[in-house]
Amino acid sequence: MSAFDAKSFLETLSTHPGVYRMLDATGELIYVGKARNLKNRVSSYFSGKPQSGKTMAMVAQVANVEVTVTASDTEALLLEYNLIKRHRPRYNVTLRDDKSFPYVYINTQDMFPQIRFYRGTRKLPGRFFGPYPSAAATRDTIQLLQKLFRLRPCDDTYFANRSRPCLQYQIKRCSAPCVGLVAADAYAQDLRDAIAVLEGRSRELIDDLAHRMEQAAGALEFERAARLRDQINAIKTVQAGQTMQQGEGDYDAVALVSESGRDCIAVVFVRGGRNLGSASFFPKAGLAEGAEIMSGFLTQYYLAREAPSEILIDLAVDDAEWLSATFGERAGHAVAIRSGVRGRRARTLEMARANAEIALRMRVSNNATVASQLEALACALALPQTPRRIECFDVSHTMGELTVASCVVFGVEGPMKSDYRRFNLEGLTPGDDYGGMRQALTRRYARIKRGEVPVPDILLIDGGKGQLAQAQSVLAELGIHDVLLVGVAKGADRRAGQERLFLTNSDTPLILSADSPALHLIQRVRDEAHRFAITGHRQRRAKARRESALEEIPGLGPTKRRELLRQFGGWQGIAKASIEDLTRVHGIGQQLAQAIFDTLHPH
Image (cartoon, rainbow, N blue to C red; front, side, top):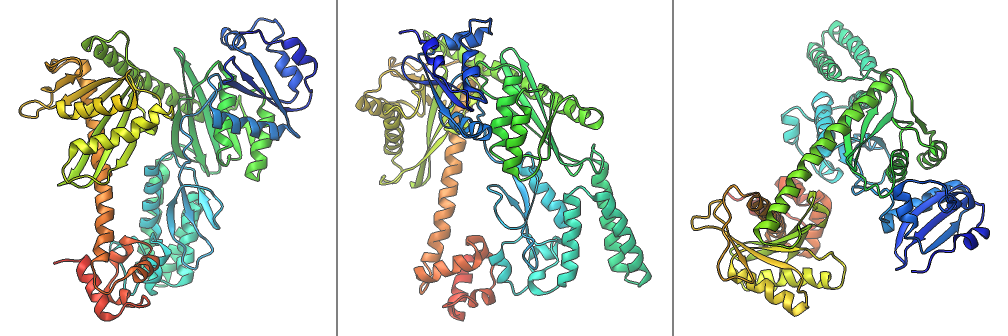
């Protein structure tokens, strides 16, 4: 490999802001960086001054450097973010989980707004509250607000086609605005109260509710006064469980913990002074350490979502001002990145750090278990080295109906769920498990052959010699020879611990002891493939039966089916509709509505 001529390159390099890309001798992008002054930043790598061992290792691989000059610092930051997200260079800080967090969404433009769970772009009209650290936390909040203020949870289509109150009204989770059982101004007041809770103004709301309760009691409206009393008590109970104080604003506390070459970042979400919970991330740090990891995380995390007005960090970063300006420009409000805080904010940062320490310990413990199991598996199968990637296939169907195959992937850190795949299998003779396995393997390993998916070290097949022979045949046809095939067959009475392992190079099955760590790993991977296949099959079967149930009704053609789905927002809405509701749909008469109802509600 010819050495990179840094001196000649730097002589012509611009001093403008921009992005630089470092490539190795094969042309692979190994690092992306941003700079306010490209010449100064890139020169620092080749100045000959002492640098960290990781940086020196990277620079030794550089065969070429490409630069892109940008019009502004912000444009450079955004370009760096997009390039890292697209190429995931090995020496950059990269986040594995960029899934958006959920919000509580209220379309305040409706007369009777729905309160609902939402994940995605925040460009819809109305109000968003969050983000929440998990879907469960979001749904718990929605259920609490339904219980307190009886806001409707149903979709607009279902709401518009009601003729009588639904079950939510019966269990006191909705005030039934769909059929006029609550006045618009009363519902609007409940909505304002719910928003006050979501904004963290619970103390102010309690005072207002107490005043309204006294007024209701004075007017002898004792039932209304009792409901207001119950709301006050419920809000106080929730408020007592909050560690934050009211009026503390909206901010995230971000803490980094590093140990034994592993990094964990925890984010604690505080909105309206309320602690909404935390989430943990395990970035791939490349050559980065400390402040550079923190800076890389902030860039990738907050450019993918709206930043709050404050971001508290336990480790100062050099480009905090740069990041603040970019985040604020994208969010439409000022964003401050602060370190060295005091008081309650410092305690929140301590909480974030404690969460990161716990998450990292659990991760290390789990990885140590998986690593020891992989080593035991290498020993049990007499492998020359420890496997790092295992795939397992399973096939699920009900009497040959709607067959689904699953592929799950395990690595040195356990299940790699982003690599899981399902295959809807077609053209099979009912019950042909061999044919199903062959079709799934062909589809998967054709992609591996093309280099689209990494080659596993071990391929586990749920089954005995027959299934193993199918896998061996498929791989031979595709010219893939460097994968170890293992068939996992259940014992005589199908009890765990009695599995027999079939290998292609042996006629005698291998039986591991019931307490073998290698067997435990095989069981875990096999059971995960089984679970993933069954879940996919059940979803496919349920969808097919819902669709076929409508198709079997005489007189209900494609146009009317589409209109039903449009009017009721989907299958669930149709299933909940009464005969009277169904007759309101254009083209659905009384007789056809009765047939639809009877089909969907068999006695």
